[in-house]
Length: 378
Ligand SMILES: *Cc1c(COP(=O)(O)O)cnc(C)c1O
Image (tube, rainbow, N blue to C red; front, side, top):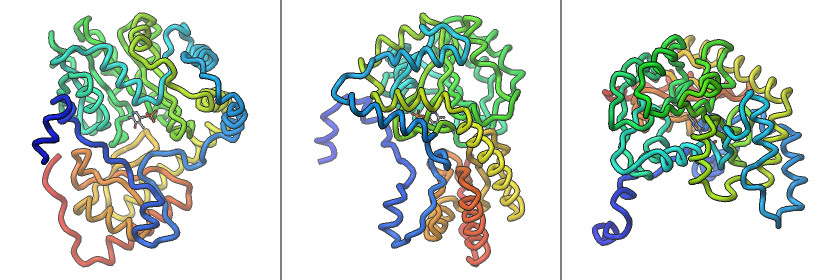
């Protein structure tokens, strides 16, 4: 039966691993019979969306029978103004994931190579495979992208370098001083995609100036999203900032109407609601510090994070620990599926969520006699 099924579909599609999302709260409630479940597994905004964004989305619904403007002109112009770029260099799409797929579809011919450092955001592999490319992953250095090694590895076959900074799932940032030498060392036919899904959360001055490189005409595509700091993950809006000729390539392969009316309206309002963003960043920075301090008190090492999540060394099997935490009503993400066995990623929540997680973790680690050891690897 399996062999018969395999005869249908392009061979490259069979090589694409199925996506495993964080467990939905509803599913955990149902399966474990728990009423009070906290999800700290998908790096969502614990404050929710900006109320102004919700109102804007709601009032757009009366025009739901009319196609949206495919190129999201109001949002595009607002983003161009925000970042000091030509509006022709801004491409809005159905989430940052969609931007990554468009990049691969527009840049890769079958067999072309894409470089990245892993463990990183698992979707990269899928985007590259769908386009028929080959992803070559070098190891992270100190949990962040290793730019000198990537530059040394880039050759005639390389078309794209995918950088995640801050890196998901580690939260670490690449050394800023590596950025300019990296761009200078890359062959001119290589495009750099700088995925800054978590850039808003980073302390000022720690990230390289990717948008500055775009302004300077370098072959750099900065990828951003409204899903994380702007709290609109459910509406699906992401965007690329790039040289107009590169942006034009993305527009050619994009669907005609990738972002719905409510999503465009909400993103525009969210961008203008700087108060909500400030509150989000404040809650996140405090929560991040609290999680790191709480983990240290439990004797657990965490990776210094510039994002809205913290990766820590569990000191035991990560799958086991996540299952035990699930029984306590706390959903977090095991590192194993990312290629980081023995690690766990926890998203920063509201203060009470962070306390709930730390208390559950303390209970699990102290009440069980012998947690199974971490698997070898990474
Ligand atoms: C969440 C995330 C994205 C996806 O963002 P969407 O806009 O929701 O598609 C992209 N890159 C990284 C590294 C992420 O963690």
